[in-house]
Length: 155
Image (cartoon, rainbow, N blue to C red; front, side):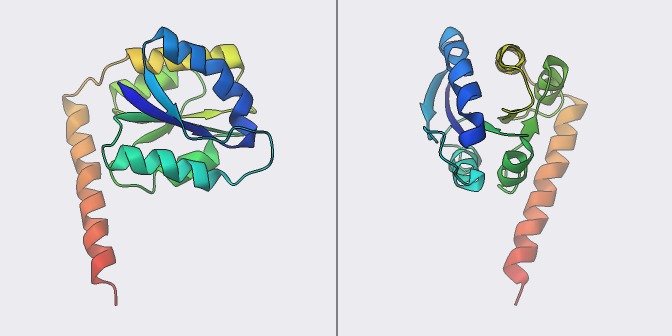
């Protein structure tokens, strides 16, 4: 599996901490930045990852900012993206089991690096359960379709 990973300046340290875990899990990744500690705007990096997931260029992605909230907001603007802000292994597991989350969001200024590593392991090792949860995802997809038709009918 190939993923994209991106962060803002508040996520640099965590990104560097989890890259070895991705290699351990044999997850091929492309780092879309940022690569320095100078202040940057998180939407620029969130868009790069989320649009690739939305278009099916990659199956999954990871985004990191200070709280994870900004990246979550950006990522979930894109059709087909199910971005989950995970702060522990339970939320990581449930985001995959029940929501088939395809974009993991981490909080660089809140979550400890060792916890983030375990979140990444859990998230990549947990399959989607399907069943009744698929019905719910189908409803989300239908909402996205209705929103597209609403947007195209606006004057």
